Image (cartoon, rainbow, N blue to C red; front, side, top):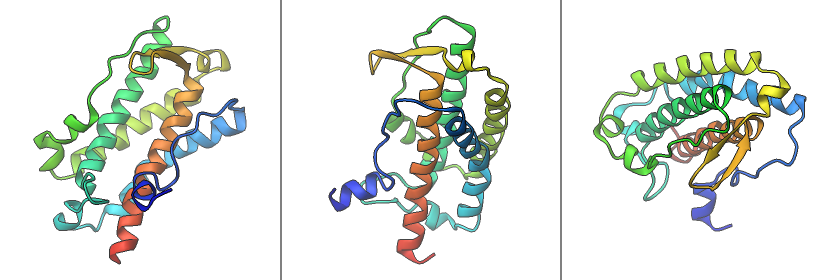
Length: 178
């Protein structure tokens, strides 16, 4: 893996698990539960200059990453709810890179995004803990991937997503000696 690839994927690319047992399911839910506090502890003392530092050359700034996490996880929470209330719904994809270039992602303080992450994750965890195995087997269709996956798969992917972006920021912090 090249240095650029290591910076892009500091914990490696997402690898779809073949089977997610209940123990793994609980581990993924714990990642979702703990993520807002963990992220807050990582960035709470960052200055505006630090928040406006890209995690890698050509990459998003920390501010954009935090806003991306709020946008992405709200979308994921909604997709879970759609899958639980409709038969294999086709979700609406969005252009994450273009969203990250909008002014609310580039210029706003991160505090509103952090509140969104905290609230979304609190509701998401309450929902996840209430699901039965049958409900975790529900699916949604992602038209960009042209396939349907179940909620266990998507939970694993979003636990990875939390750890993936956390590692971007943590590696930057360590690299810069902040």
